[in-house]
Length: 106
Image 1 (cartoon, rainbow, N blue to C red):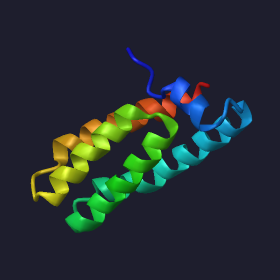
Image 2: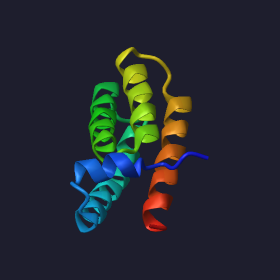
Image 3: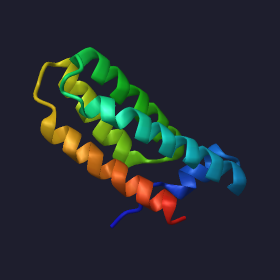
Image 4: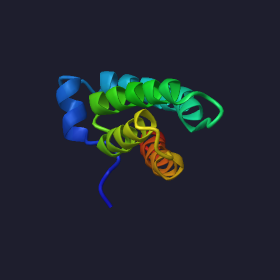
């Protein structure tokens, strides 16, 4: 299975500074925990949920969590187009869980 975080990308983003990389990953993990509940909340309006998914996508791209970024893109597009987002959200939740597990085990 491919790693959830592209360490080469992360190293490039943090100029090889491992302390900075850990700090950035910690911020990303917190953002995942903050944003994912809103993205998954079917009680929120679709534009708000799409904006949250867009924010998560940007953060994921910054740290090299490409699976999270891709899944966030699919959720965002589904919400903006008025399509059911339940299955894409479940996939996003799984990708976030994998990324968080990898970060915690680092």
